[in-house]
Image (cartoon, rainbow over all chains, first blue to last red):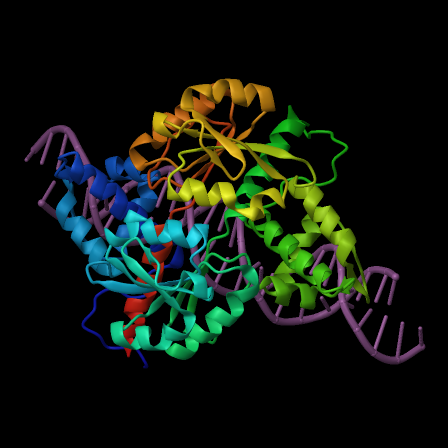
Length: 219
Length: 219
DNA sequence: TAGATTGTTAATCGATTAACAATC
DNA sequence: TAGATTGTTAATCGATTAACAATC
């Protein structure tokens, strides 16, 4: 009775599928770079490192973009996935915290090539203000609101120390940012409607250590 | 009939649980730093950002380390989780590729504090050999085998460009490395018995972009 | 038409969660 | 004993996968 009417065809794509769409997009880009114009689900699955049944199931949530007996047109599927993810548009982002990691992120070419444009680098350390990193000015944290408004920033990246992460997140939210990528090794709490994803470098190593330890024990 | 006999009590911890153990460990460290000596599953779950039922279920795979009616001893549980993960021991790691990201990883304090010791930084670029980053020498990629043997390295980190990732992984595997953390935006293929985890910075941003786009569409 | 490959079904598997008996 | 909180059960939910009908 309360079905949302919409001209959009795709609805409720499972989270696990959403997380894999960028992987498929990257694989398609690689195939395109190699001059491949058509591929089967088997070939694309191989390039993406997943099971082909899973790939077809995932793609079926987007629509029916393949041709039975033939496969997928690389360029066409690439465009459809990019559109679905939203990377056909430009996403201005701000990075807060310009230590080693912030530096690496600012220079990361993978952002720009996928429509993410770093419009500002913010740091609490006054001595760094005015510095230029990767062609972008380092500015005071207090400029956040102005920058968010000027550029229509919806996505913020936290590369600040753990102790500052919650404060940074609070300020981001109050300025209107609704998506946060958190590299600080700290849990941050945000209101409903704000998405947070986190990347914790040492957690990934710890997961490997766990399995490594088990290998050693069973040897 | 083929049950493995072992003095170890914990068996077959689900992957989803393994991935959360480091999060619990971090939360416990934070509590300990705040001088808190005992906590309930509710309190720890809050600090870790998970549901308390899930936390208790997760901990139950390790054993029975709490006290009904009382809660968990922070130090004791911390030790048990650290032991289970394997971070009570020292893990020598090598990092291959010393660009911006490799630089940031080499300097990342969260590694050392959790028992991961960067024993070498390797780079194909000869002009960087001899350089010292974060107190560690940058050495030729060809030294990998010697370093792995000398230090007993089991874990390798790939911070090289995407195009080099598979080659680096192959070399790591042939030198005896059995766990790889891959930061290169490329799928790498390894033999059975070798664990790979990957961190792709731009994929996380793309997942946020997808949700951001949906918020905009439904507004 | 014959061969190939998609898109979908349905079975299985694993993860989450609320509820509560056990017990400190 | 009464109150609190764990550890476990069982129900639910979501994700994966093999198999195959649909169809190019």
